[in-house]
Length: 119
Length: 492
Image 1 (cartoon, rainbow over the protein chains, first blue to last red):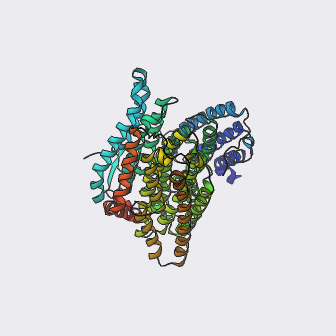
Image 2 (image 1 turned 90 degrees about the horizontal axis):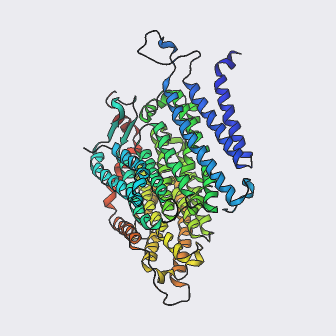
């Protein structure tokens, strides 16, 4: 059990990434593919957070002496995730607006039926 | 002393000023990109002589590296940022007349953001910062591919977006693993400590990062989005995507493998991938009937050649690769710009629809021909010295496999020559009407094309103009210790 306890976040993160990748690769509906992108993004963010996380850790505020420096979590991954979340939101918004346009042109969201462009 | 931060801050600020100004003065939006990029070009050219002696390191926020986000304006960075500013400036002048339909202020804003992202990628010294600028570049190019809102544009933007964002997720996982290993995001600091961990644990992030960046750089198995996206976008955007976006992706791949990982063992693999990309691209280009798709596939081929040359990893090889990069950027941007108005006149992008264009639009077709000849590598155009340098570099290694691979690359060049000559033949020697009414592209579009032609010929005749810069750029890429010392020198 100690293995599970110490690696549970990594297992969860890579589980989410693989679930997202599976959805992107196998689903035919564009909305489902976009959901897959979202899940993959969440997995990546969870992974980044868990790199810097300590169990029962707290915010790294150096000016307040009652916080033990041993228990401070690494703030850099959290700053990274903040940025990554914003980027993920932008991509999701753009993808959904493209999905609306795609439906207006083709009257379907099934990616297998949309194949005007080929090699 | 000009500060390299201005290269990113000024276009970014002006990009976000466009919607604001557009509230009051509708017609001003299209003048913002030329102003911002002209400024960038001047700053880059002012910086260039200084960085040839010493790279300029900018620490943001008053902290010293590796604790801050830093910019590294070395010879490679400033060379590429001048190229980006030059191409961006000329294409934005072209777009003054070319972009008439749709929400034009959004076009100009996204265009500036795209070039800001590209400049940021080549100047940054922080790997997460590289990811952020990369995303700025990618997201604005997804949106610009769909700018015309037609069937083809939307379909290829969806493809591009899905593949691109899976790629950037992989990149981010790789960056996360690197941070977990080294506790730093500074590229020089990671490079310095890379030997302190076992090669196996470095291998996984390296594969993830190269795969993630390889999607944007259009390296062979990851390039399915490129022909669709480059052929469906407006021609001015195709010029920038083909001329800048994929080169920036390739730069990122090379910077990561050369400087951060110092992974000399995978260079041969990269060279093989490069030749594979080259052959696939050229053979697909040969079988196209749509001229923009043909140019897009030819970009894949050229990227393969550049990757091959850089992966030779001798000073000749890297110089040749960078030279080929510059020459492809100039020639391919010129080709897309000329094709934009030729399609506009012919009403179709089929090659057969361009019959007799040589008599209808003589100047535009002359520019197309020069661009095509330069891409094939005919003297006296810029493509000749660059391809010559690549061939010489491959032969100078005296290794059998490089000689075999360069033979295959020359086979690719023959195919390239075949399909470009076919188009030139259609332009000049096909079609019945002897004297059709002349209808040239407008002057605003002809001037940038003419400047491209002049640059291609001048650098082709006097390659010495650029060799100094290219040599010091290649020595920056090849010597990791110099790079690390330049960035971290003050605290070592």
